[in-house]
Image 1 (cartoon, rainbow, N blue to C red):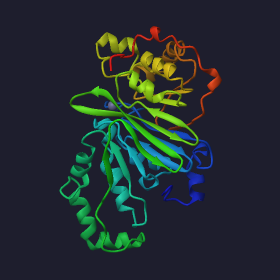
Image 2 (image 1 turned 60 degrees about the vertical axis):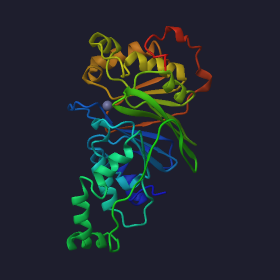
Image 3 (image 1 turned 135 degrees about the vertical axis):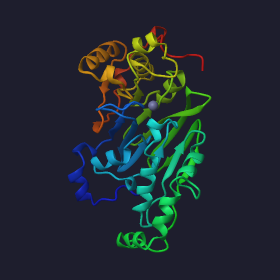
Image 4 (image 1 turned 45 degrees about the vertical axis):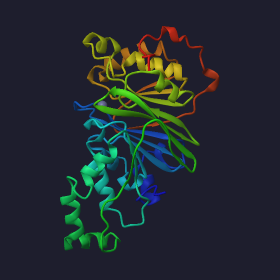
Length: 332
Ligand SMILES: [Zn+2]
């Protein structure tokens, strides 16, 4: 495993204390917004650090730059999980993949990429032999200046072309490694135009589920059953989504809380938020209405912030009356 391109001493200087590899699992929220940028949020991207490994979930706008702000680079990741192909979740793929390739000197672990249907096609169309960025990487392979830069970094000639281990996945265990397992669950967001996946990561430290963009449903609850943390889309207040008639295919404040309660997680991290919930008064209102449903810790996340992840308190499980949860689709 390639855990970092930086010396350990540099990592200690650059990373928040809670992000050190020898501490408990940590979540870095790089992107906590949707497709409409504002001053505080744009797009989706999350890092889980556990057991000295970094896992990247989605690769929304400026992910590579935001990683650098946390002292991380694309070479610090061996695994990328894509929820779906809306641009707010994948727009930075070219930068992420090409910086990883460009700075590689040939002794790194190949990057494994998992995503829903057409992920293999998308990656090929971006960085494949005839991809949009083939002009770039072919120039870097063949121009003497680029060759010299590659050699100065410790690489040898001829430069290899970019290659990634890409898999289209749906439902099931998609990856098992030394001390970790990843499970995918196909969910509904904007089908049939795009398929979408939720993911669960189980490590020795933590079990964490990412809903991606989804309609609230039993499949997500089942995937998150007895996990420690649920990282959930929270597009807006439920009342606002319903007032506009756009609650289908999206998770709102109440449905996020209902899913967290039914799954029995300990922490609910709200992401993919719009400006209504992000405002100071919106945060207070969201916490008030959600805490009446979910008794665990609720985090209204901020971009470029890291959060300590904790094992759920199994003794705190409540008796949940599911009949009170009116915002979850039961028909899947
Ligand atoms: Zn989105």
